[in-house]
Length: 119
Image (tube, rainbow, N blue to C red; front, side, top):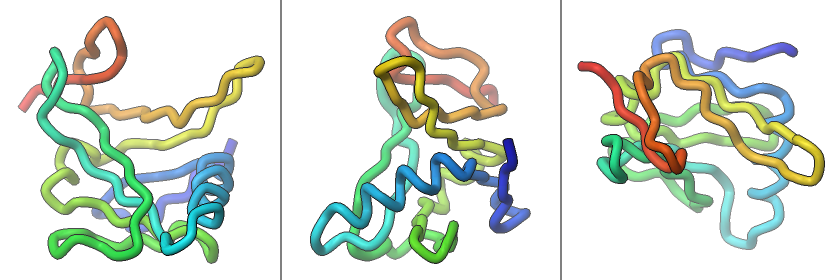
């Protein structure tokens, strides 16, 4: 499986299957042209990934052109927690999920909704 790094200092990568899936989701929605990724304090472990289909970046976002069909906006304040993260779209039987492989995550809650990092 190949992984493309878009901007080295940001160190967020997407597998080709993640790019394909996310680009299809963006194309499916009217008035949307990108995916915004951030983390927010939440859950029982500390942080939660937040992804949303958007038409424009927030003022503090960094733009990453993942492919000709996919633009990502990443919250600049979330970059320290997201640095080194790989996003993959994984299919297992009838189920499919966008999976965050975050080397900064030191633990996850039992339900898988949140994670913690060591500062």
